[in-house]
Image (cartoon, rainbow, N blue to C red; front, side, top):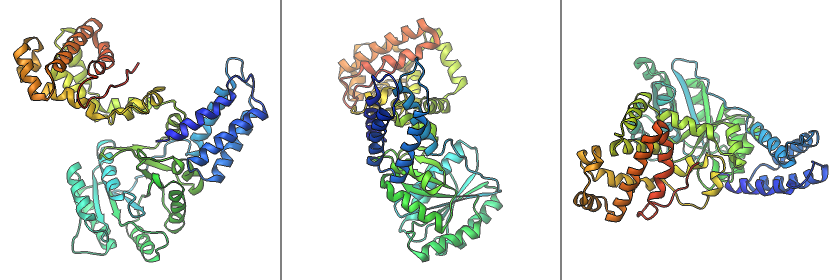
Length: 455
């Protein structure tokens, strides 16, 4: 995500390195390159021009302090303007009715049905709401079944009527169902449609009139670049929506849609889809996205993800075990599983300032942890609880069961013991050392590429 744009912007700022001050000549040369980078990222031409003109005006009006280099000042201005370009700050949904209604709209193939499931899970787990999914896509084959499977997967109720073909009737019935059973949010999944199709556009407008949604969200595929922006503009003029959800932002996207859509349509980006898993939906924070575009990482989001998996009682229990040198393989396995729940390892590492560029060409994903898990799960409950009983015959059985060599099992156990001793010496802070040291002990394991050391 935004990798090419980040690299181009970094090269642009190098023009100012070594300069003693900002002048109209050197800032114009830098911003000319910045504008090219934005256009290559498929940012709307008018948006790119306005952006660089604003940055230039602000840069030339700034006095460079002796403690700040001109390139650093320009990066600060670009960062602030990028954040402002994308909306300035996160915009929450306004769900005031009981039940509240969220209407999903967009083109065919944008990912509305999957997004409806992700949003239901988000509201259920993050907002503690009781959502009901309404299957109102009566056109696409298997759309209702897809939503039913997703609803079952995330344990959220669904209203569907396989006999009814009128989405207006289904939407009204779903709303009545929510009122009767105490659900506080209805997410209406509608069929994909083209803005040039008057029949379908009139139909979704009628659905909107029928259920009076608190929020109408336009779901758009971020990989379509400026096409996404143009489509959003047309949809907004015909339907009128409250916010945008960008899907597939983790794919091969240049970022033009995210950078342009707020300015062109004047509607905020509220959510972004960042992966295929059902929990891969994030609130859109313009300032954090600006950080990531400029290679500054996103440490706030990383901390938030960690806090979501943080269990205070478990942490206290673990601290006591570490203090008594009783940290075992069960504890370690639990920590690994919590890390996996936070998301893709490479994406998490990229949130740390300075790491994204370093791991750009490194193949890292959550399967990198599967080798460790296989070894631990090949142990008996007693072996996991008492690492000291692992003799040669036990290790050979574990190696066979996990699909690894005896050398790899020995290497893992040795690294674990070293880490356990270190954690005991350092107390609770030893967990940081655990995460620094464990990966480097497994560079030769099948399916486990080397991972960067996080400092």
